[in-house]
Length: 510
Image (tube, rainbow, N blue to C red; front, side, top):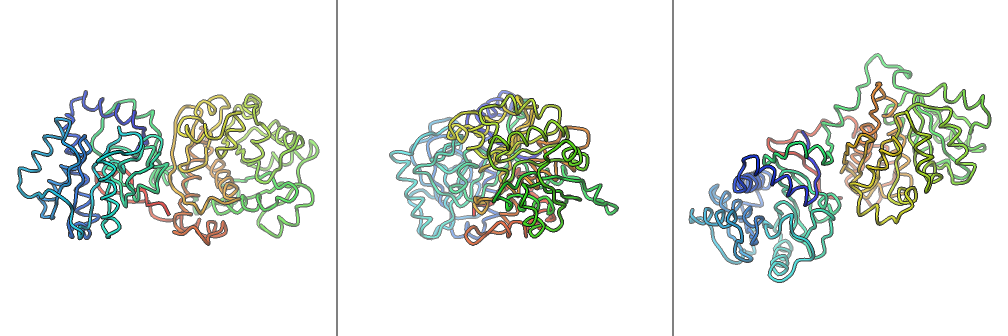
């Protein structure tokens, strides 16, 4: 099973439940420290051979650091420990005593030649900007990093809020070893975490784990998305209609159409405002082009020849837009994606949207500002509550909610939550969401097997969309054509093989 995403409170609750089920706190500390030491000794061995300095705080995170120090010293690495305060818990005191018993550790200031600096100053329970001796220790870590040391944070970089992602004055790690799950704050503030490696420490919190969002990975996505058989034809690969392309905005549906084709759709119809047909024929010749239906006959012809409908890219915002969306949704009852202006026209009117979408597999794909308009709230409220805010909305409208951003969170009407942490700032450009809509439209059509798998389809689309951006490696100089170009590589790369005991590996932010 993949990693779960948790807040500081959820992590603490899970740890308490594990302890109540019979696993001592000291054993969890041992597993965490030994697991981190295993990674340092294998994944970052070359740097560690130059020497390891462990900055140990006074809490249980410091205790984890003492376990790391003792374990690495036993393996023959040169290790010294820099203490910031005396251990406050029995577990941390015992970890310190055990590590020192070997006689292999040195204490005091780190050497300028150390290759790895381990940040074990503050844990998941810490909030607010670091102060006093801890702040000074963080400055020492930063100086060592400037001298060429690799910084490995235990559980999370000290000063990073595990829930909100606030990180004023925090360590900026090159890698973070996260214990038992992935913290929300790590996904919000990837820039201070470096590479994130989540390791299994045997947390056992029973049914409550199911309430934590699932961090999806290659394996999950490739199990969800159906293979295209050798005997496939355009009908079995499904038919998608993309409705949008208002005056002056034909490019949005072209991008959505390219996304759909590169996701494997068999037949693509693009429905645009009169006057945009030539632009679509030139921009995406594989598509069949229609104009917005003006009468019942045209509308019936459209809905009778598709397996899914994606509405919104470049649609425009006007009373006529809402009328068009409503007419299509009343005539079409199959799998549906609503994006951009197809959502904006329902600002403050969630009930009408729910009535129109009722009884079908459906996904809405807002970014935070669009979701804020839909709910008549401030955008910052959406950003601050991105892991929860779509849940009640998904239930109310009977459709999956894909909240775009870093990370993307998908909510199903049944209450399941999925997180996709792929992507880079290369996607922070106009038209990126249109490409995603095309991919999602294809998957909603192809994964429609009689169950409502719209949330899963949307999550897979977000993962692949983001993975394509990651494969480009760079941000500046990248355009959406580049993302479209590498989509085949994203679809066809081998699923990631994780080492034993590793739940997830997330690359450092580009």
